Image (cartoon, rainbow, N blue to C red; front, side):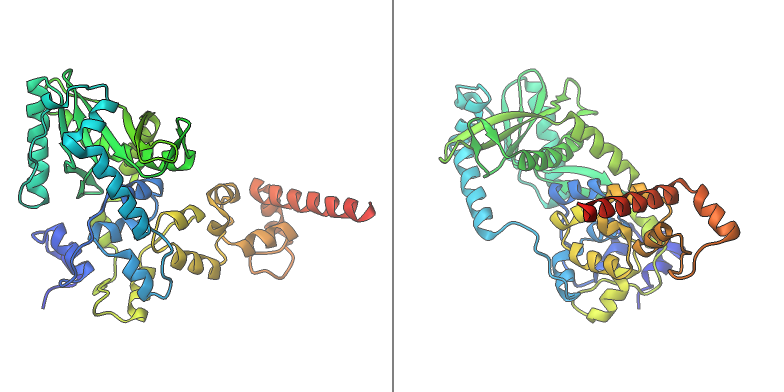
Length: 386
């Protein structure tokens, strides 16, 4: 019988991280690869060890959430996926003629489109890196259709697949993002463009890893966003500056705790095997890994509904949002905030007195909460008099 995950991490250095994560995921469970969308969401919440571990282990969080009784209302519909695939095929038809036209290249016949096929993700990533170097040395327009890039995240390799990368004669590498949401009068929905920019920033970081060892290469800090024009199916393009997103994503990814460090703190025998574990066992396993819930998770994580329910049951201030959580400092529960506002102790009943009361008054957070309560009372009293 194989050793437990905790024992493997602590006492068997020869066991690779990949084997540890396979044990955590379940030996018979096929790993779910992490994509740029998931990585961008993870970078937006680097304090969530739960998501970092589950994504690193390749656990299907949608299936896990369903087994926990909190199915996720997250992800694209099949219709949206089919529409996006059809639009991407149109943009890349005839050797990418439409895409190259948007880049200002009139003669698509002279553009190289190398074959990137190879065995396994490691092979495809190596073939992509070779194609990038060859295109840069050749000094000619080159289109890489669905290249595969590798990026180290918290000590674990992640393989990313952008829609396209274009290499110019000057050695400039440009990420191309093809989306099916419309660009009306030259502008698209700001929230969707922002999400696309955060996703593209992950590709830029992965390209920079290859460019660092490629002479003459430089990665553009702007990406080409291609969307349907107005209400038609004709492609239109917009250049999106992603310098801010690249900087933020790099900083957030650097903050991520290494996955082996998270795994080392787990109880022995812990597993997220959705095929063999009962819902009760899965709940216990999930709760053993710290999380950092925020309302923004509802739009980016399949486990968000489960984490929200647990945070609500615990009365955690995280359910009110990150900004509120930051303002409240050491007051970590809604009950503690209400008690502080009423001048009560942390147990929710008796008034504070003596040293405890003095300590509360000295706390600027407690003082601000009490001041807010006093202002609310004054406003309600003034409203009642009108």
